[in-house]
Amino acid sequence: MSHETLDAAAASLPAEAIDAIERAATSAHRHEELFSERAANIRQSAVRDVFDISLRPGLVSLAGGSPYLRSLPLDRLAETAARIIADDGLTALQYGAGQGTEELRTQICAVMAAEGITDAQPENVVITAGSQSAQDVATKLFCNPGDVVLVEDPTYVGALNTFEAYQVQVETVPMDQSGLVPELLEARIAALQLAGKSIKFLYTIPSFNNPSGITLSAERRQQIVDICRTANILIIEDNPYGLLRFNGEPLAPLRADNPDDVIYMGSFSKIFAPGLRIGWALVPAHLQRRYYLAAEAVTLCPPALNQMLVSAYLRDFDWQGQIRTYRSLYAERCRAMLSALEEYMPEGATWTSPEGGFFVWVTLPEGVDTYPLLHKAIDAGVVFIPGAAFTPSDEPSNKLRLAFSAVPPDAIREGVRRLAPVLQEALAA
Ligand code: PMP
Image 1 (cartoon, rainbow, N blue to C red):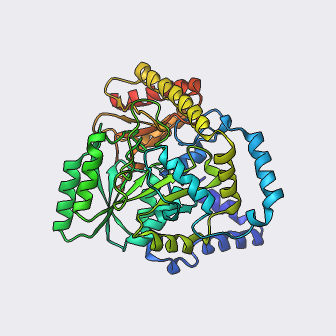
Image 2: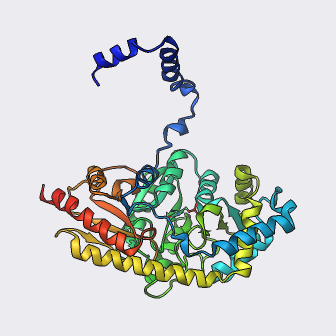
Image 3: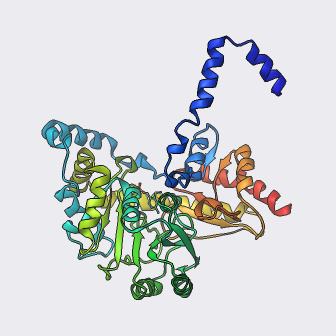
């Protein structure tokens, strides 16, 4: 509609409607001057934007990294939740301990033992509203504006959003097929320290990195810890996917042999259910008290009912069997995605072959920007996340993330088939 037509339309509106429009226009900017400097850095998550689009009927979404929950025993869980409220409602609906229930913290130690952390003590576990909130607490606790946080390139968009909201300077370190490159990490630390920067921590997703699916090799794990220890930099190890390995040998987390160097973050979001918002941090003993106080200042206490449900799940259900179910489900979906990529992708595209987790990372030739391709892909009936979302700079990226977790194999194939001509066209341009 042109301006003239709009004006003519406005002229025919009743006075109250015009008042309402003007009020809305003015109130949209009200209180803007009151925002903190920090607020300017809070960015909208590209993943959440695409998430909304991906709910449109008929689209194949390879965008969202949602777990596939249909294999959960929903009826038994419903009975369990009802029983918790009936038998123990006054505890389940009451405030609780700020650090989380002792029962669940003890059970979480057993979950971590399944991955090779055998010395964790319940008093060093802090239960949080998902590991997203554990990251927020860590950043709040350690980072002043302008401090440096090191991250893998690429890294989890939610962590970037957190760091940027705290006005942290995010510095990326390249990965290759074996994960973060130790020599490049060492060089980057040296250069930043020479420039007088205060580096607080390395945030890393060593197993099945989101978005790349890459896993840090066994040889490099201790090297990375040693480099950070020498430079007096903490490590935040984010490991929501570690138990979802479907190929290759399990690798112990960085935390396993390095209890004083690593704040380890885990979550029930991928191995059970994200809607419960239960994650945790395993904090070195010397940092535990401050970490716990900072977490308490955010949420007072984690949700009691959800903790009790997770506890009942770990106690009375076959949680390890459920993880085996998830593993074989995701293995099948990953295979479907890799074989569809093999079949349909144009010459010049390459991709990772993950051994677990939810994601495949596709690289197009240098110079192709995947962001504008998203709209074309949506027109073609498929959604992905452009690579720029996973870097702090938002610079054009020739990469894109495909998630295989939430979609059945046939739909994965169809999605890749729809995506191929869009990429083909961009490569030919
Ligand atoms: N870290 C990574 C690497 C993730 O991929 C996600 C979820 N996509 C999170 C943390 C957040 O998980 P939670 O639901 O536990 O907050």
